[in-house]
Image 1 (cartoon, rainbow, N blue to C red):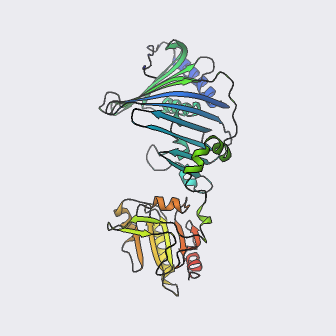
Image 2 (image 1 turned 90 degrees about the horizontal axis):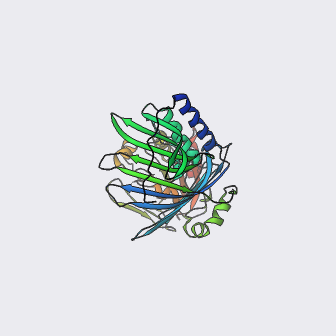
Length: 397
């Protein structure tokens, strides 16, 4: 869509109670969608970069029992330019998230790693879970309802609702809001809805209006002529919709519990001193080796380090420790590790290693024989951590 929305000036004659009543009606309709399908023409206009145009397939369905997201969804997109073609998808249902973009597929499962699905951070606006940040999920009716409700309840926004106006020749109701921070307008949003169904027809978002990095996002919705039919979103359904992607790009279908009896995967990671540490799949170790994958910023980092060291020091045989931190900041790592001891290797930027080992929750401890074969694993920290490490490490040959 290359034409910016031409919105009529919104009338301010309606009393506030009429505004609220009209908005509530729209929110009820948006949240009450049982089965939703649409195509979105999506345009991003940027002052400092070339414009980008996407065509997006939107599917969502009600999930009243799911406390993690307002709906289940499948979102697929493509964009073509003079230089390249980009396509991808993301899908969420019942605590399972699948994402494909940049020739890489990732999957997340609440049963394996609940933390990634929960809000994080202690700021006034904590980062929502990954299922709430799916690319283009904000275009779905249920997510639009959240955006409008947030604007209505946030004192930084001023808003108005017009129950009957015209947008691009169509009879619509329109919600418009401005967000002001420190006296500056930092966001403007406009949603136009069908007067009968209350489903979205157009949207326009201005980020940082008037600034050098101003960004305008325009979206126009097109709906199928027939009543949509929704099937439960499962891994099997996604595999049938995207068979090529699932066959060629799925990196890992196992969890860390499947790793024992397998060779430790290949990895090459930087040390905190700027060198590289490499392990080749099938390669052995000089001593039995305990690989610990952890996050230096986690509350469990220090007790994991202390208890692992205590356990290894009490073994009847020598054993090495590989500390593989998922963090990239050397200062964060050195703060918790203090000084590496003899037989310890200190690595960073280990997110890819965690993925290749199927470690979706941290800390993860992997016990390897001298032949490089994984004999046992541990996930998470508990009060018997040192005893558990001793019990598993003492069996290494």
